Structure formats: structure tokens, C-alpha cells
Image (cartoon, rainbow, N blue to C red):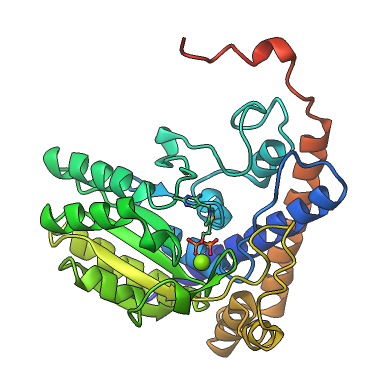
Length: 319
Ligand SMILES: Cc1ncc(C[n+]2csc(CCOP(=O)(O)OP(=O)(O)O)c2C)c(N)n1
Ligand SMILES: [Mg+2]
């Protein structure tokens, strides 16, 4: 399916916005303003943005910690991330929870679950609800190479395949699960082998090619909407930083990082747009300026937001 010029520009805008938001979070972390750690999706922005942009408004997503791009596509603003990471009162959880631990059913966003793999059965449940209500909704979630080894991931995949649920699993194969390389994670060659074991459709794409991530998601979503069941899309990529800012990733071979640095998804998309005459230098700078302005305003807004008052801590507690 061919994307219009404005759809391509929107993808470029979200790629840049995601990268700049995360760069800014790193800067805030180094200034000692973040409560907790900072996790980065550097080099993986094309996966979050490409997959999220391929969905329809009524679809549901279950992002994990490196999927800031997915949150932005779903209508969250950089300020929400800054506020949340700095535990400020005006943030999505009012300073009660950290990093990307927030969601909003109205936006179709299910909050992350720290226990790896647990979002797979939860989003399978969203798919089951859609199927039972005969709604053309698709549920999409993300797993890492490490998360794909967990019990809930396997139970969720099997359940979704048996029930032919409209579930899309975006498997981000970024080479590492903390310090564990993929070769020590699984004996199969590809994460698609895990899907095949359950009779689930699967495909492996270049995760640094936002157009490939977008096209694979569109295709799988259309198929799922026709009642043809779930799919796993393996996105080959590389975790370009340590597990989080505190981790210098000394266990990752430097040559591996250097090789992947040349495959940067944003630079790749810029070349694609230029080659296909879809973005002029003027249009590119206009998008970049818009992103810079939004980042500047949102950092300022977040820094001016107070920490929550102590008595607010127990307010939304159920019992
Ligand atoms: C069930 C479970 N085991 C261990 C952890 C601790 N842990 C958090 S992230 C992580 C590595 C995740 O690797 P991967 O799934 O490949 O995602 P990536 O960090 O590469 O995005 C580990 C082991 C956890 N959160 N949940
Ligand atoms: Mg990984």
C-alpha cells in the first residue's frame, strides 16, 4: 500500500519526536532530575513508530519500556514522558509511578507490565473481547528477544493461535536481553520459529526500516481483521545503548555497535524520502523546527510542574 506524502511526513515527525524526547530524558537524567532509571529505544524508533502508525484509531496497543514512539503516535506528548520520568504532579500517574508505566483506555493504550511477557496474554484478552463483540479491533503488543522466553509469552501465543485472535506480536530482536546475547537466549534461529510452533503466522523484517515495519503490521492487521488470526512480526534491530542509562554495555562488542550505527533508522528513512522525492530540505527543516519547539516547551512545562503533595499519595488507592 502506497503512503501519501503527508503520511510519510507524519512518520518522519514521530521518528524525530521520539528520538528527541529520549535524548532529552537522558539529559534530564544526567542533571539528576529523573526519579529512577532511563530506558532508551535508540535505534529502534522505526519499530514503535512504523507499527503504531499502521493501526486504526480503535485498535489497542500494549507498549513496553522502549516504545516511546508508540505512546507519541497514540497522542501522548513529550511533556507526559518528562513529567512522568521526573515524578511530577501533572504527569500521567501524578508522580506515583515511573518511566512508561501508564496507560489510557480512551487512547487504546494498555500500560506496560514489568514482568516480561505478561502483556501477551493481556493483549490476547483484548483480542478475545473484540472477537466476542464482533468488533474489527486489533490488539498489538511488543516483546523483546528475552521476553519471548517467558512462560506467559508462550501461553499467550498458543491461546491467541488456538482462538484465532486478532493479536499482533511485534518481537523486537535487538540482540540483547540485559547482558544475555540472543545466542544464549534460544536454540532456534529466529523468533518466527517460536510463532510457527504454535501455528501462528510470522514474518521477519528489517526493524531499522520503518516502511518494512509499517507494511508488515498493515498486512497482519488486515488479515487479523478478516478473522484469520494472530501474527508475530520479528523486527531485526540492535539495542544501541545499555539496558538503561546506568549500564555502559561493556559486554557488547564495539564492532557490533559500529556496524549498526551505520544502519540508523532515521537516517535510512531520510534517504528513502529524498530518493523518492517525498521530502524537500525545506519540509525537513520545518518538521525538525516543529519538533525542537515542542521539546523546548514541554521540558519547560515539566520542570515547572511541582512534585506531588504527600497527602495525594493515598488518594486514588482502592482500599
Ligand atoms: C519475568 C521477568 N524476568 C526478568 C526481568 C528483569 N528484566 C527486565 S528487562 C530484562 C531484559 C529484557 O530483554 P528483552 O526482552 O530482550 O528486551 P530489551 O531490553 O532488549 O528491550 C530483564 C531480564 C523481568 N522484568 N521480568
Ligand atoms: Mg532484547
